[in-house]
Amino acid sequence: MTPSQITYLIFGVVLVLAITFDLGLLSKKGTVITIRKALYQTIFWVCLALAFFVFLWFENGHKMALEYFSAYLMEWSLSIDNIFVFILIFSFFGVKEKHYARVLIIGILLAIFFRVIFITVGIVLVNEFHWLLYVFGGILIFTGIRMFITKEGGQEDLDTNRVYKFLKRIVPITAEDGNGRFTIIKDGKKFYTSIFVVVILLATTDIVFAVDSIPAVFGITQNKQVIYTSNIFAVLGLRSLFFLLHGAVNKFGYLQQGIAVVLVFIGLKMLAEMFEIRISVLVSLSVIVVCITFSIIYSVIKQKNINPSQQ
Image (cartoon, rainbow, N blue to C red; front, top):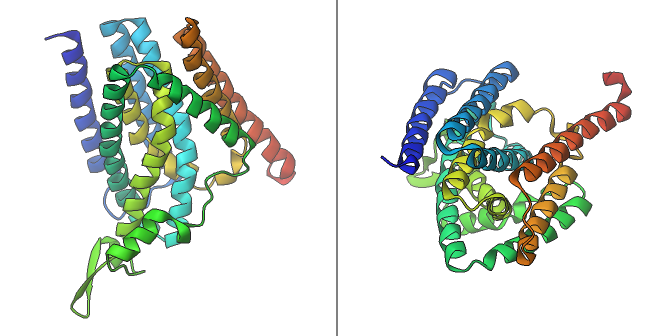
């Protein structure tokens, strides 16, 4: 087997075993995930991603491993912004805590399916039209600047959400959750429950975020193995991060600005290649780590200054 085939095989086996372990042993249907359990699950997924980093280092060399780690960290930080929108959706539809775990895993698995399609199309297009990387760079710079100057981005009114409005037009929807089911029968007619709507919104919300995150990964590497694996590992950790951050939505107020700076940097890095200026993956990794870490620390400090009683 080639190194590429071995990498895909190991990744596939680890993925199946991890999902089975996470669903079968860590998350039973109908149980409420505590902060402690969410912390254990988050550590589990992060350690798994780091273990794959070590495997790549020994199997394919340090360059590919560092590209993977940079891409994973980029996706992971963008996922935190994604989670805040997930929390908004759950709150809007009044989803009960006992349904959180099941709804999240279904939504996330759908998100992975759509991301694989997006990435595959992106790889084909970039291989055929290399100049698209410069377009991606421009998009990232624009998105980063807009994100930096926008206050509390992503807090949209779900009543005006296009996907939600479209669903209401094409299928009969009820406000009931059907005790976790997707459909219920009322007066002999099938209705789709709020749980069904939430799952669809979670998947489509991730697609919207993928429009920014996938070009950002292309700015770090064009290696398709790295793009696929880093994306999937980051998305699989979304569920545990959701429970970990559920009560801390307002504690990372400046994370958005940190992510914005990273997006602008990666966009500039992509455009710099037009002039044969190449920035090493180690520099990219350093910028990502510094920006995300500083924005989180600064957010926590500012929050303590606002609420001194919490000290």
